[in-house]
Image 1 (cartoon, rainbow, N blue to C red):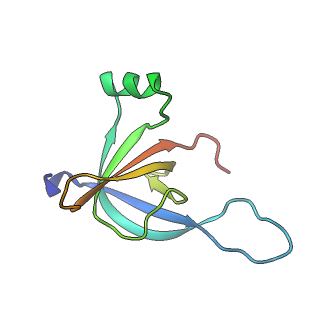
Image 2 (cartoon, rainbow, N blue to C red; image 1 turned 45 degrees about the vertical axis):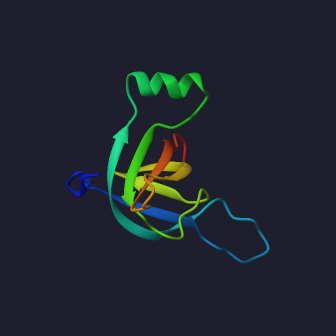
Amino acid sequence: MNPGKMRDRIQIQKKSEQSGPFQPLDEYEDYKTLWAEARFLRGRNFYAAKAANVKTDVEFIIRHCKGLDETMRVVHKGKNYEIEGIVPMDNTSSYMMIRAYEIKHDV
């Protein structure tokens, strides 16, 4: 993996804990800001993912980071992406791949 390809700045957000009598809508707060390589699926990979009913639109390659899970979301260039899965890239666990899809209607 070439670290020079990590030119995109992404924000990881986690659901905020709210206490009170009412269940709030999903509200998120900033958790971490990371450098990443954004790979948007296209061509053969895009159609293979759609044929397998996988919602993945983009893959974010980041350096290994503890504490990430699928309940969080990614913000990239003003768009929100729901995390579908987090996978280590190699045996050394130096890099991770975040598979995500765009949230179309987020208020």
